[in-house]
Length: 170
Image 1: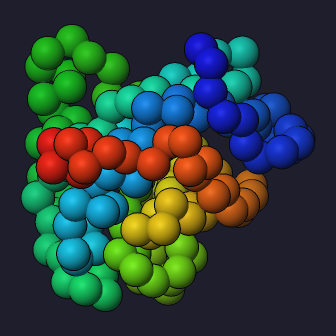
Image 2 (image 1 turned 180 degrees about the horizontal axis):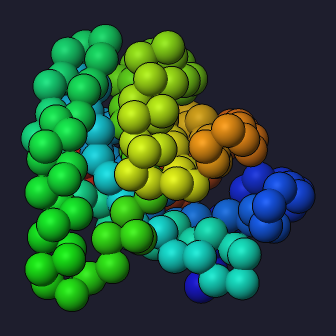
């Protein structure tokens, strides 16, 4: 799979933690961020092959409460998504990425975001978290219970900026 690779260098933890992100995923999260004027959240599937985390292009929106300054996942809705995966023969263990937006604000993990990550780690361990803003700035985190692996920033390349049609479709 071709894609942008981050973090810039591998990190040694319990396993090697390389991350490859699909350019389509980057375009999709930027489109979703531009399409809505409040914060919002979604979950995504990842694949882990030979210690490398691959982020394809598969976002799943669940029920949530959103304002200009926060997003709160409905954990019952998350549980229902996991049950749907199990009923349909899909691997719920692939749901290990939490994406959310910060509208026009900086891409950073707030105290509320840290609490959400801790809650999601009960179900999705390890977890990839990403926050994006309308300018294509993102902050990424790979974390395991008891082990904060790494945070890094990624400016989505301008050539991946979503078109007007992408934003409308989001």
